[in-house]
Length: 284
Figure 1 (cartoon, rainbow, N blue to C red):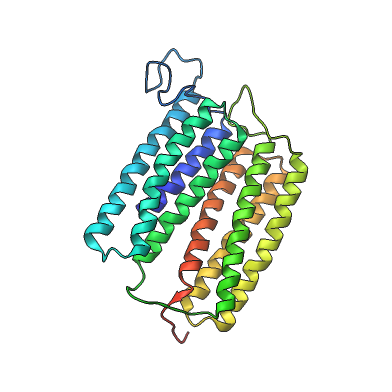
Figure 2: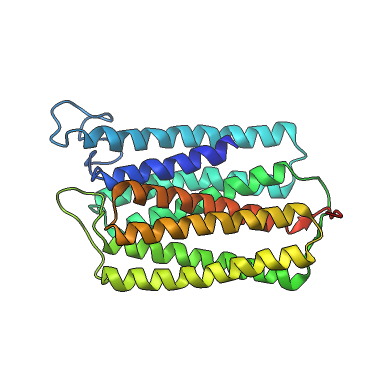
């Protein structure tokens, strides 16, 4: 659980970096400034240096928690593959993120690398969630509690969620919140057209999530899988409401940050839904 929490937290603090224009608060990498790993008083970046440095410092905490999770799995579980692999992926991903963060700074917050930075974080949230949910499930073989066609629909829905996230980064990369208050770097797409395309993909995604809720209610043999997909729908509707509100209110920073938080919650919900496609059926 700690693994999941810190992965979500670093996404939120990364969003705070971007929304406050603090992406280059530490203008070099791996040092904050040439000659110092921490901010110095003489820096011209003002409060931005503390926000960016705080996000960098959190990366260390994320790494320690990832190592602790692996050690806990190794020490106190049966070391099944479904626990070990995602936990290791989180640790590897933290290292990748540190390098990608450095590339992002050195390229002046290129929107493509910023988008990749966010998408890798979504992958780490998914991996951490997979390990956590697996730790709460019984050992040994678990049978499908839904027909195979429903499992296929679940994976299609999840794949579309990935498309929605990618399109979301294109919208952000084309909009006003670049991460640098002075010299914004933007994608060349029209923000309104990108937003419409993102919204269209969300509408299709909502339809598939509703289909999953109906399918698991009608043919799911476990209350857990029904509850899991209802939670996916709840997060999806909340995310859609925030998304439309921020669009029509011209992207206020607070709503954008909530939108990012809900994106991580959607990833958590989807992984939880996928994991509960297998389990022990019950009569409820």
